[in-house]
Length: 198
Picture 1 (spheres, rainbow, N blue to C red):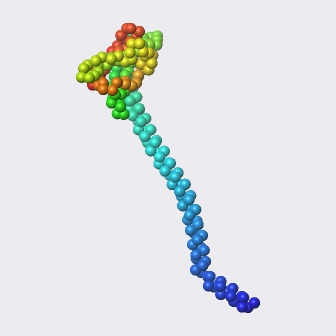
Picture 2 (picture 1 turned 120 degrees about the vertical axis):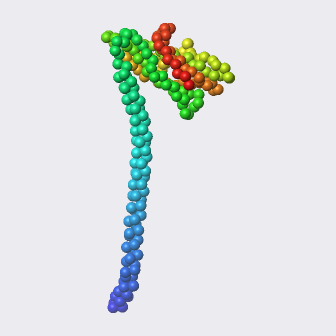
Picture 3 (picture 1 turned 90 degrees about the horizontal axis):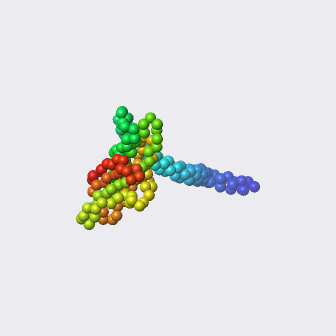
């Protein structure tokens, strides 16, 4: 029995600090591995947060651009407050045509349509029609948009005072836009027009 006790004490003594240190290191390694696994989730969460922040920054830039346009429009409208304007007067203002960067045959347009309704606000209904001067195969040609037999669709106008109309003009391949006349038609009657030259 004494011999067995001595062998046990000797084995325990030999196992001593080094073995205990290895066990402690293994336990610490397991803890670190758990932290890495949890940290991976935190890293993924951090990446998602950065992605969301980038998207919000992009949306904020777009909204800032929209805000600038609206602020500019408001300043413009304040200058146009009717003073002695004739009842029933119609205006087309600020026609802008911009070539779409994604397609050279596509143009985005915007225009303000104004109507002085008078004391009794009445709704004004009309439609916009473009008469485009195009260069096709080296020759100038005129083209209406929409065609006379087509519906006005997005180019229909209904307003009591002011409305902004926006849309897209699609040209045929090979056509080059030189000039655009925008007409405001009420039935077959021309109420207003404006020209944009490129």
